[in-house]
Structures are given as C-alpha cells and as structure tokens.
Image (cartoon, rainbow, N blue to C red):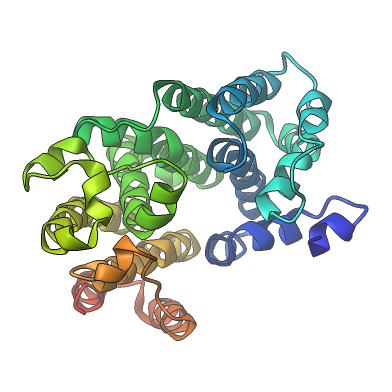
Amino acid sequence: MTTLEKSATFNHVEMLRLVSRTFALSIEFLPGMLRDAITFAYLAFRVSDFLEDNEEMPPERKVELLHLWERILGGEVDADELTARLADVDDSDPEAAVAKHADEVLAAIRRLPEDLHAYIIEEARESARGMARWQMRGPVVKDEDDLDDYMFEVAGRVGHMLTRIFAWHYAPLRGLMDDLMPLAREFGLALQTVNVIRGLAKDYQRGWIFVPESFCARVGLKPPDLFKPENLEKSLAVVDMLADKAEGHLRAGLAYIKRIPRRFHRIRLACMWPLFFAVRTLAISRNNARVLRDEAKISRQEVEQIVQETRARGWSNRWLDEYYERLSRV
C-alpha cells in the first residue's frame, strides 16, 4: 500500500510525486496558479495513462473505461462510476491510486478559472478518446504516420494544453501561439519517442510494439524479430532509426523553449528539464543493446547536474544550443 492510499485526504502534491519524480520537479518549480493547474491537468492525463497501460485489464475493458472517463470529463457521468469500477484494481500501483482519486482530481480541475478548466478538459477528453481508439485497433503500428498519430494522442495534446495554460498565465505569450503550438506538438512527440525507445522491452512484454513495421522492413525484420538475440545488429539499426526520429523532434522542442522570452525563466526551465533529460537518455540509448532487454536510464547525478547547469545558464539561447550538443554526445 502506498503512502498516498494511507492518507484519508486528497493530496495532489503527494500524488504528483508518486507518479513522476521528474515531471514533479518541473511542475513544482512553476509559480502558484500555474503550478496547481498543471498538477491537476497532469494527474487527469495519468488517469488515462493508467487505463491504457494497465497490464491486467483486457483491451475491451480498457476501451470501455477510457470512454467512461471521457464522458466523466465532459460532465455526462459522475466520477464515482469510474472509481467504483476500479474497486478490484491492485492498489500497489501509484497510478492506480491516482485513478481511484479521479473524482477529486476532476473536482480540483473544476475549481480552476473557467478558461483553464476548459483547456484541460478539452485536451484530456480528446486524449482519452484517442487512447480508446488505439486500444480498439490493437498493437499494430504500420508506419511513421501511425506512430505520430498515437504519440500525438498521448503526448502531443499535452504540449498543446500546456502551451495554452502558459499563455493564459502570461499574456505576452498569446501573440506567439501560432509559432508555439506546432512546436508544442513536436515537443510532445520528442518526449514520447524517447519513451518508446526506453520502453521497448516492457511494452513488448505487455504485447505492444510501437516500432513502425516500415522501419523494421528496411532491415528485413518484422517487429517481434527485434527482440531475438540473433537479430541484434539489425535491431540496433532499427533503434537508430527511432533515435534519429527522436532527435528531429527534440530539436523542435529546443526551438519551442528558445521561442519563449527569457524573462519567463521559470517556464523555460520547467520545459528544459524534461527535454534535456530526454536528450541525455537518447544519447545513452543509441547503439545500446540494453534497450532491447531492459532500458537505459540517466543517473540521479546527471539529473541534478542538468538542473544546476540550466538554472545557472539556461537564460541564454546560445548556451542552450551548445548544451544540447554536449548532452547529445555519449
């Protein structure tokens, strides 16, 4: 049983830290209302993630619950119906605990200013609907467009939502929305592509392979062949294709950060940290057979170093370019 579940009260900060230490680091660095709004938004998306990623539920139940959650977000059904349907779920998973507090997460979102509430609900509903669509179609990713479609539903929409919240909080950003929104999508795809690489082995174990069939076909493999030891050289060539794709998205993510005026340093830093963690993770994943049987992780020391260095020098866009190049080298 987690510490969260022992608590009789809803504690959104504790929830956030339980489900993601790295994103908690960024979110908790944001000022007041912005911090709270993004915390609640993040938790709402984690409810969807739990319903999609749960290894014990059959796809049919996932689809049913994702559609239920989408209707709850839209105010069509009471949140108690979801929490009641999750009574049999294993409580040891922190994401399960968040899902079981979905009613309180939603209540907190509804107490936000109307515009913020609307941004979060709109993107969270679309994301839940998109996840349900992917669960219905099954674990087949035919090509890069397919992969991008999936990643937009689970991560690109988050980039859109965050950008709208940032612009709500800081009026000068509203004039930059035409530039920021396409880059926000790319930023989301960047982080998710790195997640795909990190999660190759774990996703395979639960029956999903997010590597496009078209990537595998270039080296004469089918997606399940990636995990056979005798195919290691070809498999790493496919991982390198994914890494090249991630690199393109990550550079767009860097452009997103640089487009935000330097006086909004807290927003820039909150975006820098997940970006640079991903850049470093990608660097150690290239040509690394471990990603096919486990995952490559950056050390806590590297996390702390990235935080310290960006806080000291992240105001400079020129330095950000140089730092990106440094982190991308093994």
